[in-house]
Length: 258
Image (cartoon, helix red, strand yellow):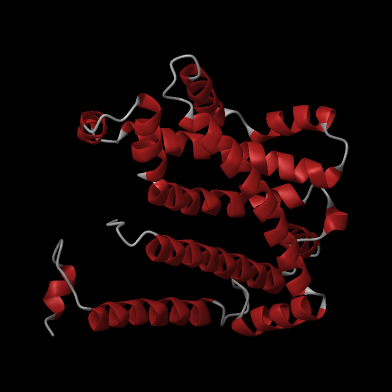
């Protein structure tokens, strides 16, 4: 094994070497954590404090709060997928294209402004949470899907037309069916943004629970061990969701090459 290969651009390493490199980085990060938290004054909590945070969180119903966060994320995601796909799939129609482009540009609006107007329209706090996540995710989802449509090679559309397909058949075969694997990958990428925003949105309704409520309460009492433990839980659940969608795309769309 030549170590100099690890420091050459675009060098290919096998799976064993990749695991070794990842293991070295993990040891370095853990070593820095232990050393930086060893003194009397330290920025990060000690591993013992984080473990105590995990223990106390589990006793307070961590699993229930994770389930509440996942349920909220699932409801907002399903609504966002349905609405966004309808808007984007109809965007090839000249009359509806400006609608999709306008929604895409609205992603620059701050979340605070959106929340203000939703609070006027929606009275139920749980519905408010779902609505904020739905609007936030849909704007980015529409933007990503429009980029997927734009990148469709004209050769594929011309090929479908040469097979005597009507315009609606081209839309169905090339755009909808032909890019379904891209939709799953776009969902995977945008779900990470939604999962990150979940903590902020869950603070709207404390009674509903969720990981955001746990972090808010831990921050109020300056319990850094619990905060880091919760951050790790959020990270691990997010990585699990990402892995599930990646495996699902590879399983259902075996022809997918990316």
